[in-house]
Length: 160
Image 1: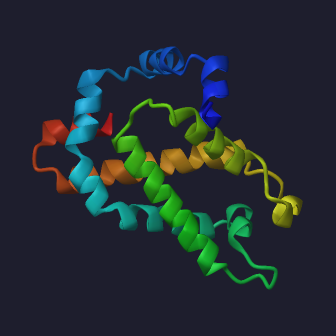
Image 2: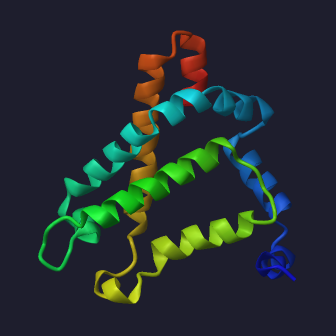
């Protein structure tokens, strides 16, 4: 039995994700629009992720998650987080529910809600910053689409 098999039996992921997709209005047309932005988003991926993490560094409450004990920014950790966000962004464009999906979803949740022992004193990342970072990312993507997509109708659909 694979590691994800137990989780797949606990939660019916295809049904759960269908429910979430219906809740947010994500249908095949929306998935096609997301797919149509693939090359642009991937081409701008490093710029997008750098912007998100540069934004985090502007605020003491989020900056603290990226500091060494000396108080300096841990550039290695920051680079790993940027790479991780880029992987997530790429995965979001290629959205699919497969046997590994529950593991990826669980891992993402654990990383953001359970601090590793070496930074337990920081606590988990507050949900307001998780929600805020998604809002920031959506706003940034909207600006990219407005600037880069010649078809204004497509840009509007991509911003939805």
